[in-house]
Image (tube, rainbow, N blue to C red):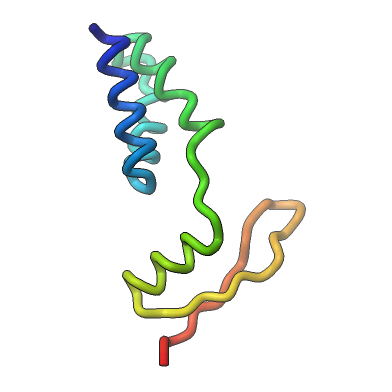
Length: 89
């Protein structure tokens, strides 16, 4: 029962993305509290979570914030992407 429920929760997190993946990652780290079936199933969200393309990210920012964003090259040492937002005209 735990394994089936954990797999359904993982699938829910993956299909809803964003904050749901972050919650799933947190739950996967609660091995001192949750049954092993949950933590082992949800831990994959740390290394194999669905990824969004830059186009998808730009679309969400455009729709939610009404801003345009332009991304610069990733910084190779940190893996961070820097960006700049401007008001939509």
